[in-house]
Image 1 (cartoon, rainbow, N blue to C red):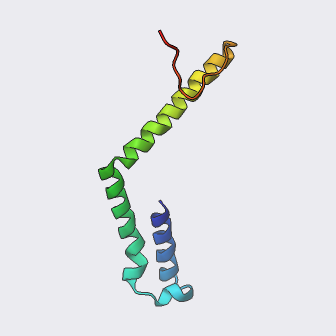
Image 2 (tube, rainbow, N blue to C red):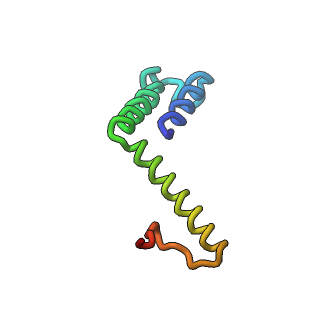
Length: 85
């Protein structure tokens, strides 16, 4: 996301000819977009994206369980430990 924002900022500065960016080559100005594509390709290939989604869902699930336990008056759960059956 950072590369995308840098690319948009660079394009805007180049287009409106602001500062030293106006003198840069378009290849330099557009390079953050290529880096963003490379980052997204790597993140999908390596499983980084899926791992982050699973971590976020697990945190939401645990927060929901803790909230329900406290609403019932039970002591809160400790970081995802499940009771033995």
